[in-house]
Length: 154
Image (cartoon, rainbow, N blue to C red; front, side, top):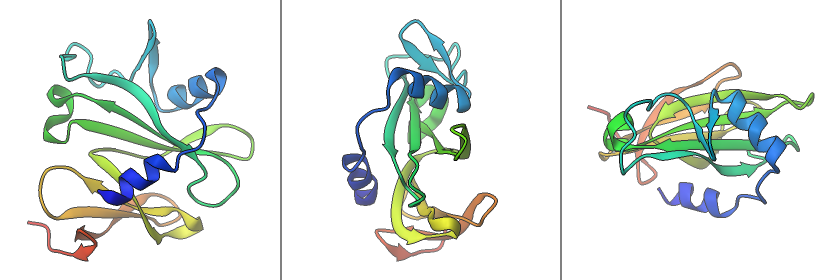
């Protein structure tokens, strides 16, 4: 997961309140008091629950516009992985679109798919993780890897 940690450290300054609201709203979150919640964990919040947060806010595909990775956590609603993420892209018109939404920890890799989008390793428990690649329409499983080497999922 080193690629994931490096990507998080390289994130730019946090978006302002209006931009945050636009990102969370596009990802399907609603504001509850001071927290953003997706609704996936309604009634299942526990001590492990972490409301939505913007983990990454920077240009991921080189188009000059910011992209965002939003996460929400909780073992009760997201199992052993403990987290769910939403990858969002900002369009030229300023609207936000969800590019990918999966349970697991996203690791942004150096390899790229269509339009410069990074391959994403979907981490979690285990030793052989799916790597998704943007094909111009959706992020789809491209291969499986563990510590940068191909492996076979079981």
